[in-house]
Length: 475
Ligand code: 5AD
Ligand code: SF4
Image (cartoon, rainbow, N blue to C red; front, side, top):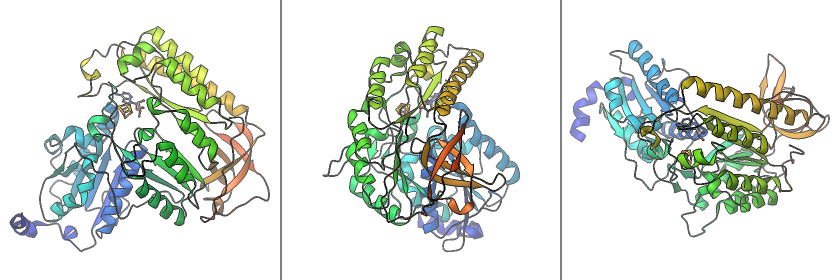
């Protein structure tokens, strides 16, 4: 190995010799888990003396953290690589493909895109520093593709891209076997981080001024503490919320099978735990739920919703839905429309079924024609738009506490988020960003609210206080 390194030293790009100021650029596709993985990979690179730059043109190491949940998402990275190929033929730039496409396509990526030097799936991130070492030593093609692992991706440093909200992965991988989904194949088996480590990190983050902590996992509520403390997910939620300086806690994504009343009780027990649950249903028909191998029926799902609705907190529920899954009839789809009506979701992420290789459903007939999938998706989204608009109109005149997340200079507007994860735009100021303000809703659209700040309640953010979060009345 040393010999290889020595013999290739001469051909090392100048910027990638260890100890010099190397530059990197990382582009992320897909979910929050990917966004946070990129933050951690960036942290590893920063620790090694790399410097981030704003564009791939300037960077010596270009990384794409990819998503393959639907075909369109997977194609994106190949169009990026195609563009790079033209621009960088013969250049010393190193290109890496990380994440789900890397895991799924493996070494074939080298064939399709010869300029790629690193292919690494998320289950191999614990080895990313070692893989970068190999690149620095001049190895031309390096892979991290092992899937069976018990390790979580722990980093000394994480570069956090949002100054107020910190993402924190508590469980990696997925052991569910939904028939349409690539995630168990791309992210590997479920593995939870010890609760003590999670809580230490939360404490440090709160001390650094991150007032909102978002716990992440593909099935976050399937968390199983591997340490002797054996905290349940609900207990962990409460412990995170009790951490001094933490003002809001969110968690995503919950799987209905592992969702029980103890999570609702945890939310009720601590005001810092936000009134928001993302509980993907995927479909309203029992026939299709069974084909999807979701492990619950429509009735069982609705019982969980009843439990949430009977809470003394007004908890908003959002969901994911797939239309046009194999064998979905008009009647099945009508059941989905009926279900969204019954539940009254605060937000819905909906998708046309996309056949994914190596999944169980990948071998089944994709029976619903593309135009029909589009028709169903449009109908579903239109109905959801009406549901959200009506719910938002009911909020006019109410007051909410928001965490101000952004200021848009052109509009002179600040944008804040309620505990229920609704966005309110209001006449604002740049210095309000990062603070918690009371805002009264004055107008409503389907996707966001308009409001005005209540006078005299500007509260600069104080990481050391543990002020309770405002309840989201009536939402
Ligand atoms: N086709 C369409 N949507 C999918 N999702 C997962 N796999 C597929 C697929 N093959 C959706 C699900 C999931 C969300 C993250 O992506 O709704 O909850
Ligand atoms: Fe995919 Fe199902 Fe796991 Fe969610 S629970 S990541 S949809 S396999």
